[in-house]
Length: 270
Image 1 (cartoon, rainbow, N blue to C red):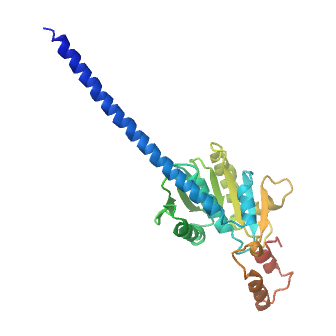
Image 2 (image 1 turned 180 degrees about the vertical axis):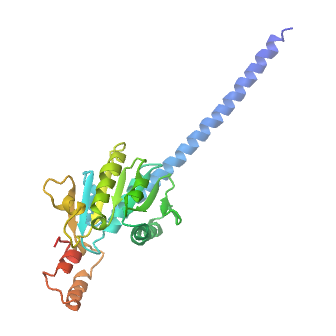
Image 3 (image 1 turned 90 degrees about the vertical axis):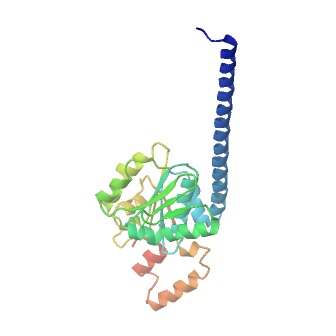
């Protein structure tokens, strides 16, 4: 026996109204979440702009260069670690749910070099970074993560294979075995940068051997790498650098031509 058509119509209208309310709630929740994400992204972007203002002119020139492969040959205390940290944070902030690798000679060195710098930046700017000690990972509110690792051998560099990268930073490049560094860049990082048209940065101080992948990238005339160079004397955050260096030269009996002095504090290949 068929039901009452009027009652059936009313039930259908009630169901339609219920579905409309549920759909409206879902849409409102989606809008709320999008606004929250946009708010987080806007805050992080504003903070990143302030952080980039902390760079001195040589660092800023490096950061703003559109070249996809670039290196910085620096003396000790020139500020390359701060620049690396700014680049890592900028890539993480401007790309949601992305992995940004910082690669250096060993995990121990990664903790010693950039981990402390990132913590100091967080204390000053309050990005909301979460520091995961066990995995040596820094997590951002937008889901992106700075991951750190060593590259002492082929097994270590394989863990960077797979994800897509907007930026990969390699530090202490002069100390990394040339064949390992070449494989890391040519076989792993460059293909991983394809999706996002990403960049690869290398940082280092001249090594005594004056040879190897980093040397060739910096010195060969037809190198595909854009080379930048500066020393601690160009670092405005070290106002007493000249006096300190003059004193150290006297203590170590260094002349202007001393190889260690020229490599470590003039950033020259000797």
